[in-house]
Length: 291
Image 1 (tube, rainbow, N blue to C red):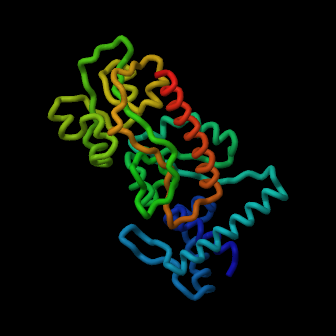
Image 2: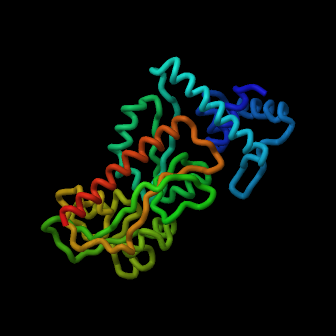
């Protein structure tokens, strides 16, 4: 068994396919497949099996993954001791509920200033659970009550929603969520505003992402319930009512439970966990003191 073969196996599980793993490793998919076949021959067992969600590690493969992740961590720790100036490298794909990830561009920029060799890709996904399940994303900023068992993650903070409008603007027009977001997030946080068929029946103008909705309210297009942490920071917006606790939802950082996070992903999770908690909790505390 060779460490390089373990490294290729780790990359394939994390990326979700030989092609994606090869792109991250700088080789073609054939090379990835050949190295994993060599590893399977060395240990004498298959390392993948077919599931409804695609290829997953076998039980023995999962044990091998744990060992490979520990070896990787030891190598990283050794490098940090003998060459502290060497930084993590990697590529992390991020999806957020309804495009909420765009709200945290400042934190992502600060992360890349700290770890410039880790590139970040923001995906136009509406449902991060689906994106992670089908390996289109590595990390999700998910607005959910609790992640499913196939996901691992950390809860950042609970976010509140309230109705906002342009300061001094008209109040009559209500805005809603569109059919696409209604299908991606059925019966979840989007119920704070009319959505899908209900919004269409009311004749509302609808939007399918958080940035679209927020910009529409900022433009004086109408009123809608927005996330307080973001809307309160906009001087042009005015809060029209107090948050309803029934519209509160936690924000989670989630990733696939069966794929050990890469050093780049672990670094991003650690950084965002602290940065987002500080931002959300500070704004909640300032609202409470002002009231």
